[in-house]
Image (cartoon, rainbow, N blue to C red; front, side, top):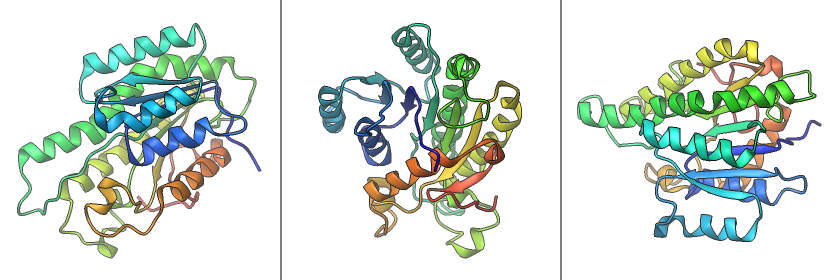
Length: 258
């Protein structure tokens, strides 16, 4: 079985939930990355205390301030990571930061739609653009011939809620702005996979499932534990290869309908 062995990883939205657990499990891996860049909106606030504890405990975990909706913040984060890597590339970018607002088609507002879309779709676009030079460098310098998440990859944390084919099996009235933003993110992933294929950067949209996080529990009692889900995500990322470029998969590696 292939293993996930990137030298450097950057994860957005790491002060809680899936993002925090990704940092924890990556830092505790036997063959852990040399650099784990953990970004969040307010790294010095009380909600980031667990993340600060992880960074203090594990060498190589670097907390980076990042507002994915702010172009200047994205640019500053990319500059800081570039400086930290000292000429090396970035192997794996996980666009995890996201928000959800409860709404129906009838109650949705332009303000909510704009905010959710800006963070969930435009944010990953800006972050990926900013870190593209580092991803390209990692791909160029890697001895691996095939695409992989250990060589150079962008993983966009999406949701089955963004699947147009599957909406009939879910409640189509709820989370309108969230659904639309994840559908846009899925298309962005497909566009990335085509645009960055020449650079040998693997691009994937990944549905983590319905997880016991603050966001997951806000719409009901989520069935999946965070630690088990993240373990599955990391295992799946280790298995992905060139044949998976531009696909939409879940945390167990199953291909999902668009």
